[in-house]
Image (cartoon, rainbow, N blue to C red; front, side, top):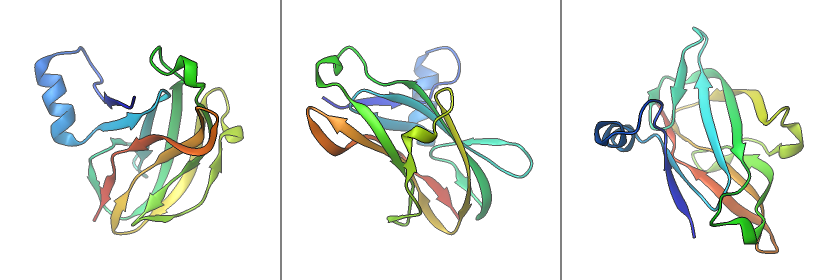
Length: 139
């Protein structure tokens, strides 16, 4: 069963839930949880759902857990991250590049949607989508 996770930075409240949905700061997962941000040249962090100008950004992926109670029996295991921009995969980032549960890399983003997905093993199958992130919108 896939679960929708909201990016709520502060205390859980009706207003915070509505703001996260309105902004588009959420993702769908089969178990693993993460936090994804883009950092611009002025060191400002941006979250999924935001509209940003095209340019160079630092992509930061922090894995918070590999599975939850609902998915324990299915043994999800992230193998790689695929960042599609305009539905073209920019490159594949192996999960072995994670250092302390975090992966950071530079990305050059052009106009169009940019999102991130995590792929790996689930229920004995390989190359399954484990997490699908909502896009950042690049203008």
